[in-house]
Length: 431
Image (cartoon, rainbow, N blue to C red; front, side, top):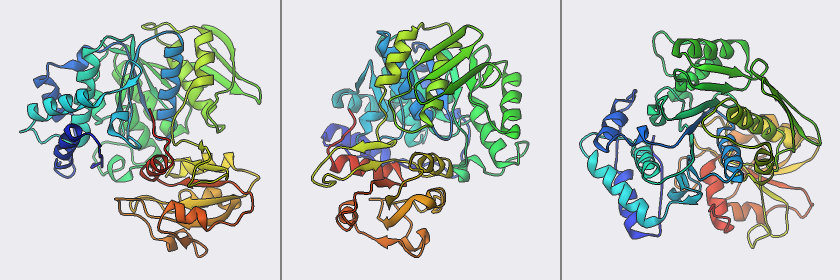
């Protein structure tokens, strides 16, 4: 997969230009290249602080945000690797609580690109190698690492049992079908079961594999993977339980029951992601986190462009404007639950390789209007695919200016790339 990254720092941009020039043989699968690259760098993935490794179709980034917030609330130094970035490439690598500095980033990328010049690594493989190198060189108490795509063949899946505190699988859904549903012998044929099979590829011997609950076919694949890899499976409804009310989150497992506040991140689905993070912490013994730290983390966790309400700005004015990077049917269902019972103006920009109905169909009962906008720098869907009433706008600003002054909220959604552009334009750059 290609990505697009720009930097105001000339030294960083020089390395990003080298990243952008990389090409990967179409259809290449496996971890051989990332392993070879890391070997040349001294295998930094084997020298990391205890790692929380999180996969999933939706919610894995939020789960990582909760893990980070809870660990830091307990006074821990935490390295975090997430993807994609929204505005700056630096967002992918957080060292002991702070985004990587430009000078360090430029040097790391140059070191990795030079080491693997003849290996033809991908954008993501270079990024992960640089990330692991940075994390191995800076002391910390824990690492939180988000899977990029899938799990089985994701570059982060070189992590071994010796560094893993726990692995987690968040919500499952259909996304990246071209890669995760590609024909292959001896794999599940049912789509969601195949997705589960790919995500469960992160399971490791003796390491807790903590998951949500899923439909029967997906559950079976995760159980098979855990058994085959001798992972310690803790699935919601079996190894642990959680429920939420309007006032709080109740969690229970073999270690006891705890009452916690609801997460501050908006959206009912965030209680699910928070519960998974709690379960991951409670099913491992490498890093201790108190109940009070968990509660504080729930209150303080932030995750940009996931149902993020934007403050007033010259572009948004005084309107209630939300931005969300969701782009698949599961994300559409979560947005529909959040806006249930109210009308919302939808400003939508989606990549051409995404299902154009993924958000429109679940939100149908709430949509007051649809404006289709381009996703800067990417092939995107034309307005007509969103329905006969969808109108075109050249920019998000133009779409906002054309809305009536009716007091209805506005949702900007459909792509994390679009969300990142909106955050840049409103000066809400993640830090």
